[in-house]
Amino acid sequence: MDTRLLTVFDEIYKTRSVSRAGENLGMPQTSVSLALGRLRRQFNDPLFVRTAVGMLPTPQGEALIVPFRQVLELLRKATEQQITFDPAKSHRKFFISMTDISHLEFLPALVNRVNEVAPTVQIEVMRITGETSKQLEAGESDLAIGFMPELEAGFYQQRLFTQGFACVVRKDHPRVNVRVTAAIFRNERHVAITAAGTGHDLVERKLAELKMERQLALTLPTLPGLGNLLANTDLLATVPERVANMLMRIANVKALPPPVSFPSFSIKQHWHERYHHDPANRWLRSVVAELFSE
Image 1 (cartoon, one colour):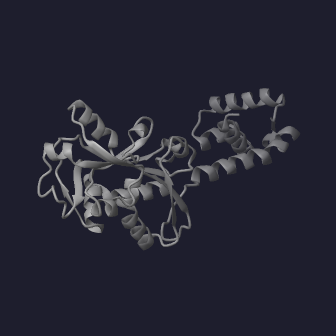
Image 2: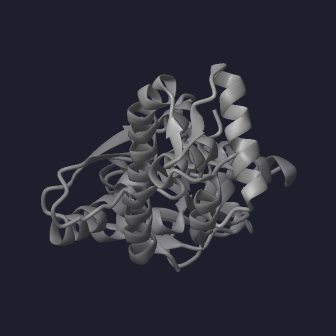
Image 3: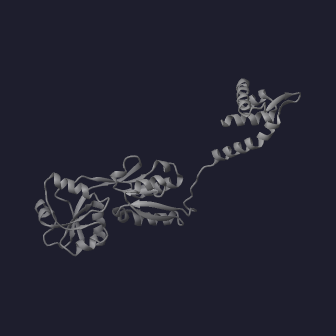
């Protein structure tokens, strides 16, 4: 039923007059009469009849006023209700989907900031999988962070930063000093990282395009432990620049420009349209953007 009909009914009940109801509602009297006519046809009852003291309700009209007013009150409360989010008082748990590179790059700073401004908020990290898009849509994941071209279509996104690649070896590597030449790149033994979000496919496609082969000694599915591995072997790894910088902070390794101009790629945060205006989701996105956006 058109809720405007309920409003007209309530106003006629209060004023006992079609004309006064129209004045109070800012409607022409003819429109009020038409609305009353629709209600009469729907309930097969006059609902109001003219008397010496005005338009009085029939028994059917009298029976309808309470449920009609209940509906109007529910609608009024619904229109006034607005979701709010106070990070300082919230106990909400946020679910963030991340790649391995995002774990290393974002978590320490993000956890420190959340503990500072939202001490009772919790964060649960989820792995990026083939189900991530469905999880974002269903609200099972609030945000996905990393290099995820498969999430570009159908989701809101915000670029945080763009990065290229670097070659990482141990500081006292016997054959790699201050440059990684094309010959060194071809002759040294490599460790490849296939973890999602590392841009591994970009490296492989560029090498294939150049018909440039490298000697793979090891392939790893994850990033953790890579710094210790490189610091204690003669292996060479081609990784995103920020990963290279992180490895230099935690291990006895150095980062050098690669001999190949690999394409750069963007790290983004992604979220579903359903939660674009959600105050809690907006707060979380703003924290991530403030911390990591270039």
